[in-house]
Length: 329
Image 1 (spheres, rainbow, N blue to C red):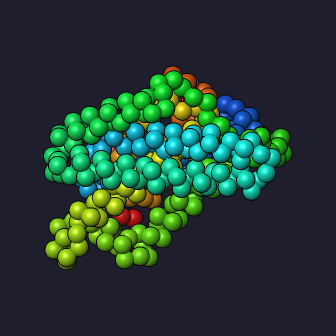
Image 2 (cartoon, one colour):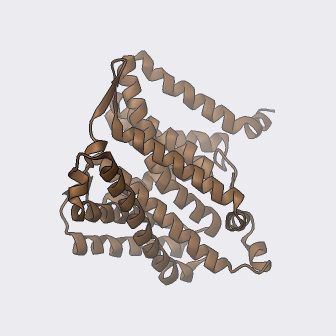
Image 3 (tube, rainbow, N blue to C red):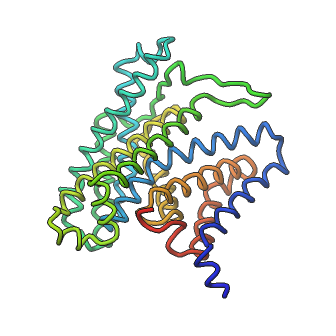
């Protein structure tokens, strides 16, 4: 009886439990601090969603464990860094139009450049090891090391300060609650990307093929679709999404460094496991859980900030081993 209830209501129980847990910090802090942490957590969650959604689709559709995904995150940050440095006059201009213009240009540039990198990784490395998780781990880990070293060669080994457009700095004071501007923009960007992904997956022919590929790639191949071409496209889009996540996180943290992808790759895998393979909605919910948990615990017990998300992952897997959402939902 208990197992049946967990199977039927596991996702709802887990989400309800998370909501209760996220209200508990109110008992130990004032409301203003709580709201500041909540907004920062939502923003972090949205930025992690951009990384995890691509990883989830790649893992769910292609059954590929891609350790090079974190490097795509770093490349996106560095491409945006180069765009901001080249068009620094737009970054420092006291103009909302120019500031959002350079932000949009950086997003497009990062997405395109890193999507091409993703295509190369898939064609040169991953295509050789489909069906073998062990070789996927080894070859993508090696690719991660090589691509990270290329960052040091192209941009240098030292940490760099990431410029922030003037309009993205500062805050709003609403009823004595300090709300930073940039996290709100990051939340809005994450919601827009989520809506676009859902629109493509559910309303277009390509999206339906991708969703079918998550469920049964052999059937998609049998119907005459080039599954390898689809794999390359999905890999490119997944890498591009990671790049946008790296860009937004670099602006949030005001820094870029060669190894930045490694730390966030861990979060991405946790999110994918929590949300469920191949589920964009699962990636969104999982990312928000991770972002909020990290911020609350980092404020109350900093040493446990990463560990609490691993604990949440274990608890959710005990409740629902496939993750919160089924693939493709």
